[in-house]
Image (cartoon, rainbow, N blue to C red; front, side):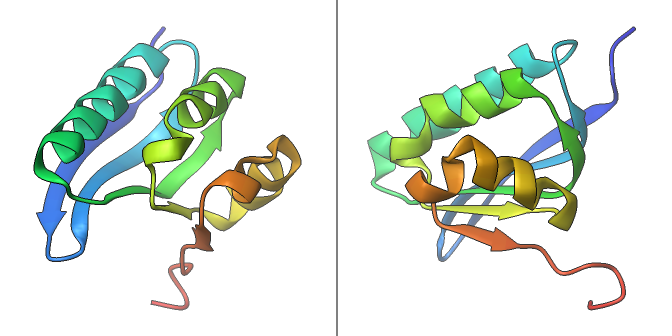
Amino acid sequence: MQTSLTLDTARSIDGKSLIAAGEIDLSNVDAFKQALTTIVAEAADSGETIFVDLAEVEYLDSAAINALFAHADHIDKLIAHPLLMDILAISGLTELVTTEVAPTAAER
């Protein structure tokens, strides 16, 4: 059974964003990898910066972390749900990518 995941891209004055919502795991990581690969290629062609917004993602597995590591050199900022911060720090991804904690619903 595939886990629920939605992916969207957005362009702003700051650059190009990949926005994910749901959970990222082995059942849907290929779609996440493809979206990352596409946004990296588009940004390389246009010279834009890349932001990955995981504010609405409460779970990701090692396959998703590996996908982020594979593109870490191209990601300018990662916005992460507070639940993800420990795993991102333990994995070392926060050492490679500027990471910001997304505000919770109460903080918005």
